[in-house]
Amino acid sequence: MLGAYISPRLVVKLAVPTIQKFVTAGLVLAALLILANKLNWISATGTANALTSWKLMVTAGLLFIYGGLNNIGIGSYALTMATVYTMGLTPVAAFPIMMGAATCSISTSSIQFVKLGTYSRKITLFAGIFGVLGVLTAVFFVKNLDTSCLQWLVIIYVLLYSALSMAASLRQAA
View 1 (cartoon, one colour):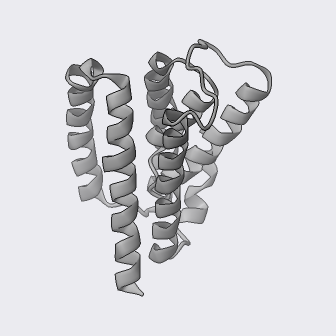
View 2 (cartoon, one colour; view 1 turned 45 degrees about the horizontal axis):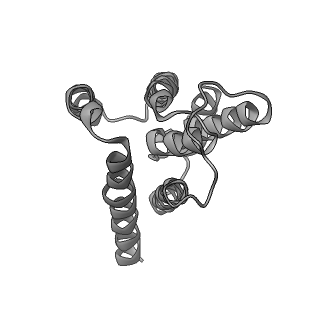
């Protein structure tokens, strides 16, 4: 929440290409973290139910950064999922942590954007309506998917495709 509270003042001053570069880098990083986990390049046993000591501190620091990155347009779901898995938590713990982190950071940052007067009411309405539909889809459909299959879908279709599309639009604009 602290990262989400601080960053709106910085984000509104950034140029669009700078934001696109951050988003592209964040998507690629998230894809690489999840891929490294899937290919066993990093040791993430996925059996722990809690974090302690340095793992808790590192995760808290990264979630602070992700809260700020939410305001640039990099969603925290995939990054949080990669972090939680890398720290060895069970995949069952990932969804509540992702939802809690996103809910707290987005609600905190939205207050700042309203105070700064730098938000679109139409986009807010659109995101609110389709966000509810997305959560309902996740509740009734995604929860029945194999976790491994879901991770590959996130890596390939969500993260890498989005990163490549963003990079292509940056090249066309340049």
